[in-house]
Length: 599
Image (tube, rainbow, N blue to C red; front, side, top):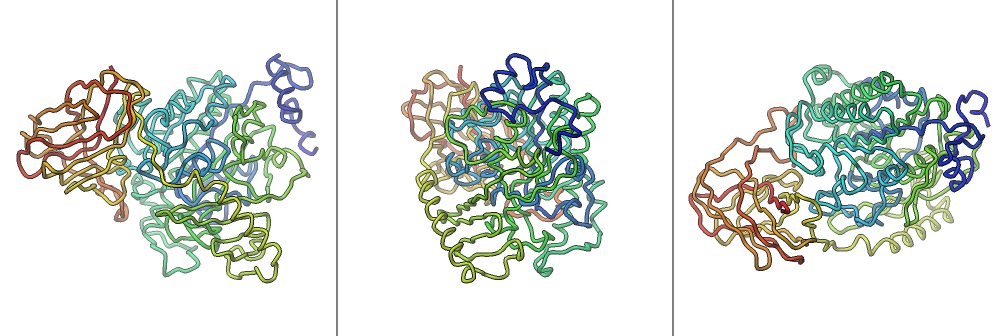
C-alpha cells in the first residue's frame, strides 16, 4: 500500500481482526510484535449550520479559513460526505454510528431531540478503552439524566444541552449538570475549556468533542470578525442572488472565521503539548447553510434533504497515518465516524446494536481500497410529515421520487428517472422499505422527562406545556421562558417520570415585577408552595449584540432561584404542575426552570 512507504509508525491495528488487535494492544504490543504506540487522541470539531460552501477550502473567496483548510492539506478531504438536514439528528448519528431514527430522535426541541438511553455512544466506546472523554459546546441530544452528556460516556461537559442559545456572550452554561456563568464569546469559551481538558489529560489518551453552536442564529460574533465583513462586497453569491440575505451571509462568514481561529487554537495547543503527531483531528458540520448563500450551486439549504441541505465538509488529519492531501470521492456520512475513529484507534466499538455506518479507514489508508457502493438515507421529519432522500455514488433520489445524476448535475436541475428507470425504481423501493423499517421509532413521542437519575434535574421551559394565558417568550421553544402567567386558572406542566422515590428540594428560576404571589408545584399527592417575597425584574437582553435581526430565538434574562420547599415524590409517571394559588399584580412570574434536587 502506498502509505507504507513513508509511514513511521507500526501498522495500525485495523489491518487485522479487531479481536486480535485488542489482544495485542492489551499485551502492550503492535501487530509487528514491537511495543505498541501510544493510542491516538481524538479531537472532533462540529460546526452548527455551516454549509459545505462556507470554507475557502471549497473555493469560497468571500472568506479565509486557513486552519480548517490545513486539515485537508495535511490529511484527507471527503468530497461527498453527508449529514442530516437539521442539528440534533446529525449529532445523534455521529454519537452512535446509527441512523438517528433508530435512536428515538424525531426533531430538535420539546424532548424530540433526545437520544434513547439504550443507545451506545462514541464516548462510551472510547471511555471503555481507557480514554478520558469531554464534550464542550452544544449537546442537543437531551438534558435530563440519562440523556445528559455526563450520562452518555462523557466525563466532562461544559456547554448547553438545548438546540440553540439566546445570547453568545457571558451567558448561562451547564458544567457537569450545574448552572454556571460563561466567560466571553461562547465559541472562544468552550474552546478554552477544551484546551484545558487536553492539557489536563496530555498523558492521554483523550477524546475531546467540540460541538460548536455557530454560525447558528442569533447572528452574534465579536467585533473584530464582524468588522472584516460588515461592508464587504461578496464576490460569490447564491445561485439565485435575489434570495440571498447579504447581511446574514456576512455575519455567517464572520462567525466561520471565528471558528477557524478557534480551530487554530486547538491545533496550536496540540503542538504545544507535543501531541500533534499522536492526535486524530476532524472537522465537519451538522447540516446545510442556514440561509441562501454560495454553496457550490447545489439545491437546498438547512432543513432540506436535497444535496445542498445535506452535504457537509469533512476533513481529517492523523499525521504519519493518513497520507497528506488525500481526496476521497466515495460517499460517506455521519454514521461512519464512530466505526472509523474506533478503527483508527484500534479499539472495539462495543455496541450491542448493529451500526449503520462503516469504517472509512480503508479509504483513508489504502490507495485502491475495495469499496462497495452503498445507499445513504436522509430523513426529514417536520410537523409529522416525513421526507426521505436517498444517495448512492452517482444518483440522488428526492422525496418526490425524482432522480438526479449528481456527478453531472450537482444542482439537481434535470430529472433523469426516465433515462435510468431501473435505478429510479430500485432506489424508490429501498426508500420505502427503509422508512417502513424505522417508522415505529419516529412515531408520536410519549417519553416522559426523567427525574431523579442525578442529584439535580432541571426541567426547562422548553420541555414544558403552557395552559391558559401562559405563553413562551419566543416562537422557538429552545432557550425560551414562560411569560403572561396571569390567572389562577393558568398552569404549566411537565410530563415526568420520577426514577427514585424520596425527598426532593423544589425550586423555580423566576423573574417577577411584583411580590406577593403564591405559587405551587405539585406531582401526584405531593405539593409545595411558596410566596414570592422579593421583586426580581431583570431586563430581557441579547438583541443588542445581534449583527442582523433575530428570527425565532428568545431574548434572555438572568433568572433567580426561589426555593419552594421539600416534597416527597413517589416513583411514578405523571404531570408535574406549576400554578398560582394567589396572585399579586398583573402577572405571577416568568419562569425559566423548575429544579428538583434529590436529597
